[in-house]
Image (tube, rainbow, N blue to C red):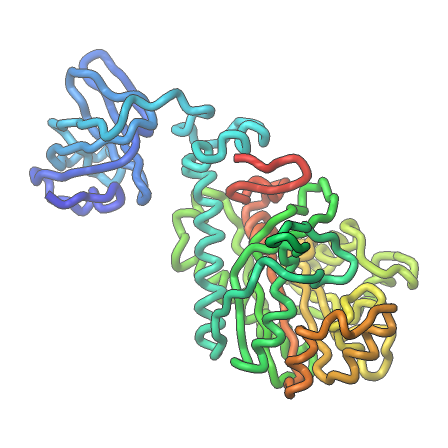
Length: 423
């Protein structure tokens, strides 16, 4: 007999035999019978047990019984006359009551017991949203002629100026965990024109906040033959819309279980220049970056003025951007780069890159460094590189904003930060 998923049980013909496999989600013992709720990857199913022992919650079981109509059961069908076979030893009591509709445990409990607490349907729904978003990211870029790449995570030098790196012993010589695939994805524009990657990045910055992690999933893209950073922003807009479409198409039940507020992506994302953004939030005109409270204020402005959950801030000061960033042609104080804010939180950094070797040499020397230190990276530009740019989306920040959680760790499977290296 083939296995029937819980979600498929309502389609079973009453009276026919069915075979479920999953976890004992909940037991409700009454005087004459026990209602057993079985959970698998697709949902829940009700089993009616008359007499006999029922394995404890979270034990994996196989249930063979008869599909029976019952208007009170999920989907109108339950399983009766079951034969229940445990597939493992009786499960230990879980750290939280997984059958409750909401999670009441504190964050430390959730993180300490993540392999089990992620089983809660609401908690699991959060990652289902993330997984659907990644599928939308890939599908949108595949359709636009991008090639998926995988780049090294052991690197010989830092990628992002000013960011700390994790140093590791690489066969007796120093190496670092990659802060981003930036150098490699630029080099591969010279091969494929349009590339993207989904992978981990590592930042040894001592941030102990609700929005920072030491390791996170980065959705990177880079494309050649652009005019400026606005071309990059247009592709980003389509990517975010594709992620939203995938959430609706692939994770509708997860949206409902998690209470996610899925945004509507405008046809054109509102754009503010950095200097205008500073003026709008009342910040000093020589401020080099936006503070979190500035981002929140700009997000509120975009929603009130444009009805948009998104706003792009372009023209960040060159002193705040990495050396490979292209300057604004008519005023080199500003950059052809942007941050995309989603509901008042920085979600994406992107922009136009330098592509002429002479510009790279000048930019590196201007920062007091020797271009020779970047020789493997710069070699690609010596052999012809088109004008190009790209962006990177933080997956966990995206999911946190979708679900409205207070801490990014709530949507990270096994977060790594200043204090946590397990589980």
